[in-house]
Image 1 (cartoon, rainbow over the protein chains, first blue to last red):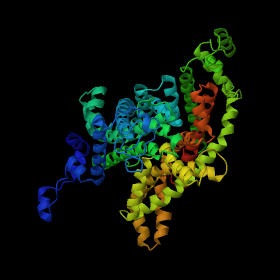
Image 2: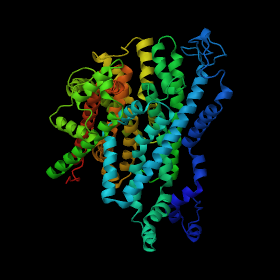
Image 3: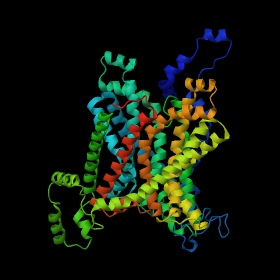
Image 4: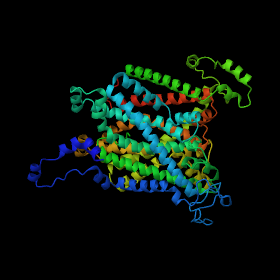
Length: 317
Length: 305
């Protein structure tokens, strides 16, 4: 974090520090710009986001501890059992049960594991692809840039959910294919913004200096340019996690994501559609969980953007 | 200007070409179309016969070129599922999707413009806070979740609106609001930050200083300049709206191109998949072109060439 901070804003921030003498002359205490951690801790969005995420991550990791039953265990005598606080509910199933008598709390918690795992791994896959292609496009320009940016255009020309849907039908549903598909449909977010950053970095003096002392293309990209992308990438990655969590749930909702009976929020929502009139909780619980996760991640991403990269266009992740 | 339009159209054709290439090979990977048409009880002889009729034994490249050839004549082939020309099936569904997206766009604009502008003008006010909560909330509500919530509340519990299908205006309200709300979040944020940038600039201060009315400064001086980044994002935003329409149509059984696409993909109806993605791509490309051309109208300083 410290390193990120220094790399990103080092030049700018230090440039703004007045000389000590000037400080004395003005008679005002000009405080040093606090480091990234301190600024994150002072940011309200960051605090709320981190708390929300901590609760979700811990409860997903500890799913087996907090669940009153196994996620796929069927309690046939208690189908569509309401939550504990509603009449007819009981604390043996705090959030009620679904149409097969499976415990909602357990399924929501285990579904959270899947959502987090898919979101993080798919984002990692997308970032590797997107960063490599984005750096190449921005650094080499010309034909390399044209070809890569045409790829981006083609991908952006039709709804990525259709592409993902088609590929999932071809490859078959499942965790690995889901991660693959979401990685392949999300790389453009990284590629576009990384390319834009590299375009402005490649003509900067320190890169020219590196070139002058004979650094290879690879060395220039990896040692000179890449470290300056860390802040941008951190922000894009965080926001992409939220996006992929939603896409994964959409695909599960359409029936090609995580196959049943494994608990996933999208799949639970799809199953709940037939019971909306009799069991509101089957739709509400996974939906609220999904919402909480996405809000938490987006708050954190927004705060990171405020702190790491004030220059970044706040609306073009 | 003319040269710019020609160049953009050529660029669009290259992208469309790429789209057909990607979808063609992607769809062919799904398996044997002949077996898919005839179903699981088909004899190997019947499959073989259909193979020859459809030219499926020829090399992929030959099939692709033949495909492009017929495409140039506006012929996407017959849908396996319906036995009718795929292209006309898609066009039949187009009005429903158009109706849905236009209505959603109207909801989007009716929310995002007032919210985005006012939250920037009254920065850190109660309204700004409320709008931030709206943005984070609706961003986190994917259409299938807000759609189900809407059906549960307004169709099942209150019985005010129909849960699915297409008919009069009452059928349109829920899908349009669900899709519009989700897309309005992004637009609101974008407009707010663009307005904040512009409001800090000298010419806005000058306008204030010469005594212009607040409304006039905001609309005539600030908003026109803030619109540029908003318009730039509209292209990408529109593709997202189309993607949202696919899921929204699935949630509400809305008989548009999106639900047709989902159905076509599930049943491996190759001509239909190709036709529907092609039409989606054309729509998005045309909208992007119009967006780029509108720069000149909003900001006369921008010359397109």
